[in-house]
Structures are given as C-alpha cells and as structure tokens.
Image 1 (cartoon, rainbow, N blue to C red):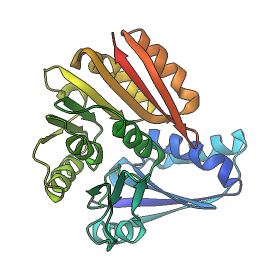
Image 2: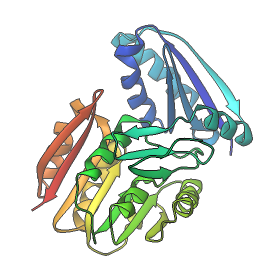
Image 3: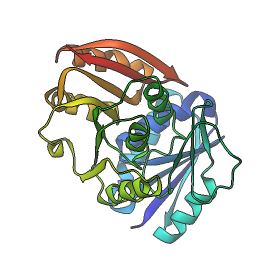
Length: 279
C-alpha cells in the first residue's frame, strides 16, 4: 500500500497547524508529524483527492492561514515504514504510562508500558487526543468491564484497557491493515482479551458494553452516536475525543438528545475529550 506525504509550510504555524490537522483528517489523512514551520500529513494513495486538497488550501488562506507552500511525494510502503520508525519517539503520560516501539532502548520504568509497532495506524500516543483519552482511562475503574474501542488504530487504547483490568475489549477499525496491526500490537504486549474487528459502526457486536472509547473526528462521532447509545448498557460510560474544544458543545448536545449526561471535559492544546454517562 502506497502513501502520499503532504508537506505544508505554514508561516503562522502555532496558530494554524492544529486547525489544518482537523480539516485534513476530514479528508482521510491519517497521520501527522509537526516540524514547525512544516506540517507533514499522510494519506493512502487511493484516498487522495487533489481537487479537495486545492480547495482546502484556498479555504485556509481565506481564513487567514499563511500557507506558503505545499508539496506531495509518493512513498512506497517499505519507505513509509522506515520513515515512520525514524520519527517515532517514546510517549510519556506522567509517571503512570509510557508508549514505546520495539526498537527503543530505554531505562527501566516504574509505570505501565505499552509497546507499539509503528506502522501507518493512527494512535501511537503522540497526538493530543490519544494522550487525553489515555489520561482519562488511567483515572477510570475498568476492572472486569466490557470495553468497545471504536476507530482503534494501533490498538493502544484497547491494550491499555486490558492492562487496567478490563475483562474483554472489542477493537473496531475501518481499515483492514490497521485491524491486523491491532493484533500484532496485542501480541507484542501479551494481551489476551482483545478482539479486533474490521469494519465500522455496523460491525459493533450486539452486546451491552460498559465503556466505549471513540477517538474519531467530529463528523463520524455525530453519525455514530446512536450506535454507541444502543451498545452501552445502563450507566455505561462514553469517552469521546478526536475534535477541537470548539466542537465539544455540539457533541455534548447530540449526546444529551440520546440520553447521555456530561460528566467531565478536558483539553490539551485546543483538542478536547468528553466523558459522558448513559442515563
């Protein structure tokens, strides 16, 4: 599978890079690397839409972003993996958790450790939204719970759920190769309670879950909220992320219409996570 690497040179990088990431995610760009003043974004060759990219860059400039240049390069699969590995740095979430790759040589760590083989899947812990959900999970009681991880990416949240005592975790991922990556990473971490499913909301098993984790973009979350409501049992918890702070009110309102109560909201660098409870 080939990928395009998009490099965008943004003059006012600190103000606009997060906004640019959010818009690109809606165009199916999957992974991002921030090297101020350049934002790198990656998309599957078959998903790339040149006209949509041109329209977005024009829209961003009209909004005030200083888009100086943007360039594309086609990366064959083997080159992509080498590039991603070179850029993958360990992620520390306080003193409780670190997310590393198999090739990292690190000193002993007193907290939990998750090993992720860095392929193309989203969810290595580097992005603010994955970081936010991990932080939330570390303060939750998942012991003995049935957990659904939607848009599971690398499976990092599913693996963390098992380490936190979840009884069974169903990891649903729309990309077939990403679902395979979940199983690879589960094996690396000796996880035995994770089931990976290739599909979307229609693939959610017909059972009651006690916790649902969903780190996806706003539009997909709004579309899938009714599915989450059906899959959650009474008093079930729903953790949503993958969107900006300014989008949180829309998701809270849509959730309230389905019988959810907002418990907590947190943010990191303009990205948000919302914890909700099914009434």
